[in-house]
Length: 423
Image (cartoon, rainbow, N blue to C red):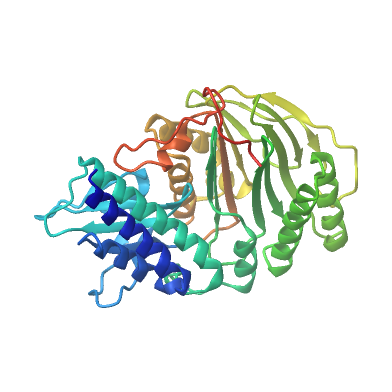
């Protein structure tokens, strides 16, 4: 890379960062386009809708209007599904780039240049990586400050209950050295009483999936309160036992002996693979090894949350590198088609096996399963459907950090070094 090349790359980065400081949320697509212009490129941002079926164009000042793109049938959709660059295939070649915040898939970026885009050029690879990844970070950083982009991602209005719950959930995907977590909850717009949560600190991964009773605002409030109680205990330095007790108390207090919750709470030691978990009347998590479901994690049973305190007896499972733990709610396996046939655990396992055999990343695996569940019911859910996958020491986290073959540094638990401790 010459000095001139480095200066132009720096100008692109500086433009995006400088324009983003005082940009509203809805002006981030303009900032990305202006950064691309420093290289003589044009760039158009598409964001995924909340049900993850369409890529929706964001308006850019002075640019012509664009149409939504189907994830299943377009090159842009392939880019989103695989989290890899895909050439646009036009006469003057351009490229579709995945836009992620960490590992959370936000959409895609269409990049074109008068002379075409050569992804075999290391300089072009580096510029594409910087533009798309910095763009993703800016979208995530600015989104809490305004509604300009979230409004674009909605295909219909949300209920108050849905607004409350989805604002309380963490991002759908997270990755760090040696770990990938991906989650999905449907419905995206209507009332739901499921919840999920996760967190990583000091080599400990905290996991929760919860299902509160009731398909109304009260059920949503109960699930949200339980999620907050679990986080509060965790963030105040309490252990897993205290987290279970906190959820139990809040559900009992606000359920009024009429509403309860099932759930799985767990802690994974990142350095050893030791998983401790407790199951309160919930479907048993699945353990995947070498791409197959090898067992149900059916121990650690207790009564549902809100039915009374009882001593927490945790089960223990020792994971092997490459294992995946799948948590889900009964709205997945109990979904019925028009003939009344259940979706079932067997079908869930079959879809997990197919996704693993195809090498699909965890977010894409869950997207496909969730849509299968939804389509089976004619697009109208009979119950909330929630899925969470935690992958330990698979090295799949690297697939979210590279564009055009630029690999991430090996910071997995089995690498030679780790540059900084997890906090």
